[in-house]
Length: 220
Image 1 (cartoon, one colour):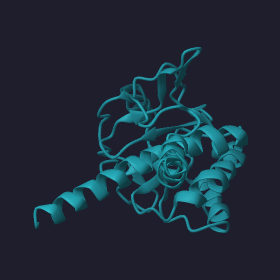
Image 2 (cartoon, rainbow, N blue to C red):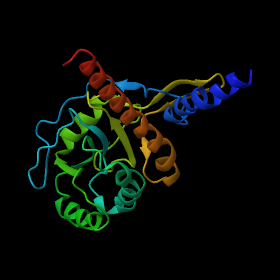
Image 3 (spheres, rainbow, N blue to C red):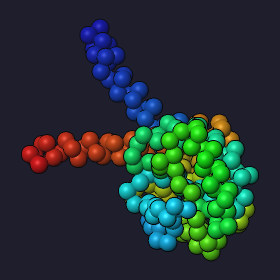
Image 4 (cartoon, helix red, strand yellow):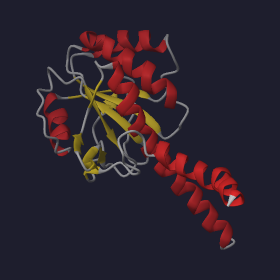
């Protein structure tokens, strides 16, 4: 009996603990898909004419509106609580779609953010109001936005261009739906968004390890 207890503590309990924490506080082991296959960026570019793509990237996408300066506090929160933690992952990026006419503000904000951390995978992408609205509509979210005013929320898009979030029964007394994460609320970034980004990253890391193991198994 004592031997079985020791084996449980040494081997089984750590696995149970890992599965619990890997699933995050939201109760999901795999973050649900809210919308499948949003369109790839075609015409969108940064001020420096860099083509930014969604395919093959885990993206936090935002729509700050035309008054970029007014959102600087939100950018700072997102930078400090999320981006700095995950910027070393080459497949992770932050993309903010900004209407044409806000270029000067974007340049100034970019300089300030660059003073805080390496911004290699953080992009301000310029586009027309019409194109930004069309892309937002393609995400099929519950909340509407005015692209000039924008939103304080950011959204998760995975490597297959699926919008990810929370939906369904977390436990028997709690149903949850979340499509966006409010960058005004530091606690929401630190808890919900941090947990959900971890889960999506973990999905791909586990898939990569599985594929690598299979290749070794079959001598590939």
